[in-house]
Image 1: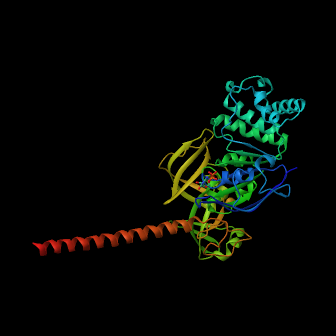
Image 2: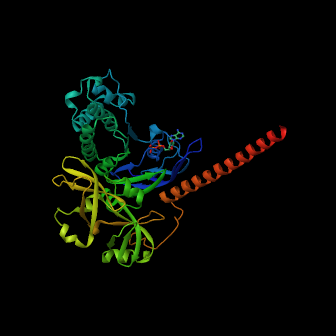
Image 3: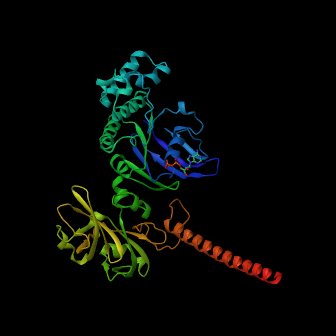
Length: 425
Ligand code: ADP
């Protein structure tokens, strides 16, 4: 039994980098939690604080209800598996797995039981006497997991453990780790930048960006009900399509720069009742755009658009079609039996049941519990893309003005020089 609780944990590195902001979560016993987000968002820092490898600047960390901020890493009863397996190449698989237990003076018979049990779970029994340098990448990674398993820790921490493996092996190891987790049953926290790993492995996902938690939820919740545009765009490939525009009437959404309007369903009208006359973003995933030759197209005749394809990516069973609804870039996904030639104009229907809506200014999802119109981001954990863009634009304008002033000043200086030179002549 192991629960992990973080309460408003912050990390500010010595140089002043605020890497993690007010990170709070209650992790239940036996959960498989995945921290996911782009590089530099603070995933590893958070994991390393849990492991005790990095000091917590402010906030509290509890394991099984016990405050452990100041407990040494070796006394936290945690095992960590890294991206690099760091095995002892000369040692056998058995020795690699048993070594840490030997150092801890665990009874020899007990060590033998634990190593053989871990080898069984990891399907490493035939390799126990083989030296680790003679193993494949996937087998080495399993030995690294075995070293963690034999210690019977309360909590497993894994930092991108699959990123050194080739794509095929990664897929195989994904399901292996899930199976191992189910068999061992220990609380696990797993860090990755790969949203597919997060979706396929996690019981709950924590999406992070720039040190802030964006959303915590089950994979399906995060996919179907993203909390903001960042999460909507980060989870799912190809990314969700965003159509910017305005709720022009209680039942109509008008896409920018097009003649097209999307009818809002009754539920959507209710959801967006405070947004009439306001700008929003209509989010629709590529698989929820239905090509005219597909089944169910005719049921969606009120939601049909002209779509111009500009390029296709064949992925075997499916095709990602890149194209536009007038000037708006839109990607759709179709089974590869359908062929949409490049630069052709076809009809496509939106399946409105799967649409999600965002406040354009705050980028937050508009949900039944959060559908009051708001213009500026409330201070809080959720990061705001648009504010950054505005800031960037602002700083661009400021730089432009500064440059212009400099130019004018230089010109004046040049003139002065010329005048000086003239008068000297
Ligand atoms: P991730 O694991 O999501 O890629 P990290 O947790 O490694 O991100 O890093 C989060 C932020 O903290 C980044 O901006 C990174 O540059 C910074 N950072 C990480 N380690 C240190 C350190 N030892 N000193 C200063 N800044 C650091």
